[in-house]
Image (cartoon, rainbow, N blue to C red; front, side, top):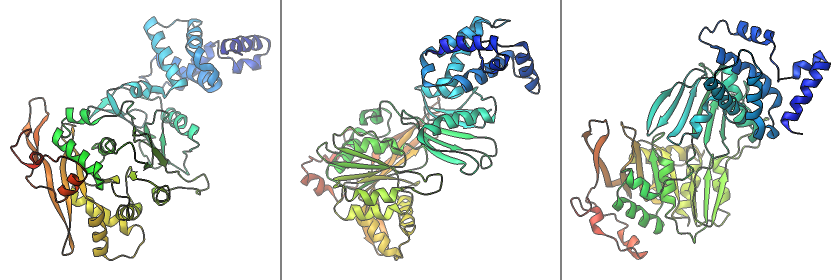
Length: 461
């Protein structure tokens, strides 16, 4: 039965039975409006549009939302509005239709932000403060929610279809929208200012290496060098801070893996978009309502070793799984890739040492460092600069051990030269002049290595 037909039946039932009128949404009574006005008298800033929206939302969304309503929702809302007295002006009526359709079928006030292709991240800090990231910079928006409950409804809309829950006993949740966008939500009492939501949007068309070169994230020569490293099966770690673009760079570097190889990707929330024909995507699982059944990154790394992978790509290592990843790199699964939260290549290696200790193995520090030095060949350091741009600021080779220390040498660096009038950072990627020790390994794989890649002042630099 259509939604419009159901409404007609509810109207007839309401005329015959006053009790049924409680479930009829086609007619607003004067007392409805009076109650709504009294309910929100404390909010002097709430105009008549907001009060209408509250009434419509309560009567329409809470009682009638279902999949069958999708196609007819705007028609129903328009019909409801047109029966009201006094009528809303046309521009407010159109706005009402758009916003209520977003409430019922989308994600409420932030629905338009999620559809805006210039927005890469949406941050809701309670009901009255919404920020977005555009072109690498945080921007405050005029978007607001009605109250904490309104934010909670949107959070529940996101997590409920995934079988996740969020409440006082479980006040944090990670989830993923149908389009792949990554969501983190945290609510009171942990979030003091109100329910907080962070959404990192999933790119419909993932960046290719040509895009990163166009953004000056890296140069042609650096891209060719990284492609040679991947093809020669070197183990690569992409390091960087939060929001520095690690996942994007990992996705691009992973695209260099030959299509003839079997690739197993492991992530907390599946974000990598590889176009090779033989890719197996694994994703962690949170515990159930009883706190059981969790599947961690470490579990998946161990399992992947039994899946005959040519390459293992881990979205991020942040705990004991680092030990399993390093062991995989050292035992025949070379050419693997991962990311680490760290601010420099040296910090990246220290972080790996700490994460190995988190695995609970009683290993001496030197043994851990030898494991790291043997497993990791190249560290790609990513950073977000002051102007919001993301750049690869270092590519370093792990040379091995010297005494008790791991030896690193920079192959490429980014040098800043100040900033332009519009605030953009000026700088240049330059080679350090050091030729990597694994150059012969690249040549053995059939790469015609261009020595000018590594020479400052040569062609292309």
